[in-house]
Amino acid sequence: MNKFLDDLNRLGIAVFVKTTDGTYEAMNHAGAEALGMTASSVVGLNDFDLFDEQSARLMQERDARIRGSDEISNFQSVVRTHTQWMRFHSCKFGIGDTKRKLIGLSRRIDGAKDQGVEKLIFQSARIIQQSPEMFFQLIEDGHEAFKHRPTWRES
Image (tube, rainbow, N blue to C red; front, side, top):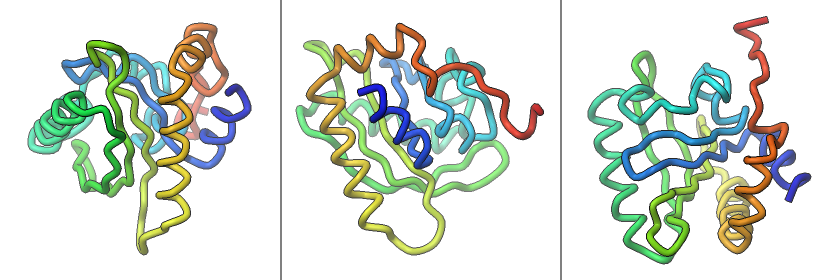
């Protein structure tokens, strides 16, 4: 699982954990960099802090539906941060008996549809869904992909 998370980060695939109110508990470097931030600066923020109101509201409505399902939701979305429009391919799923946590994998896409990336994101989501305890333990232990690392904007 360690190398797996490193590979996702290297390939630019965001991996994140959200609570029921849309607060980000963890995000890897790839996800934070897509938003122009660091991994540590995203933790504690919610959808409304990162995206415009309409995008955040739509995300939270979708997340609520995903938590009500046992399936991995596989979709594309166009969202607006407070400064720019972005298009993502994402997979999300609820975790645990009460599905109070939501795990997401996402990659910013520009241009043509890439079925290889879509398949990789979905297969990766399935791997994490099958081993959530190991995934959460790596985050708790401070896996490198989820630690603060300066972005080019900070260096």
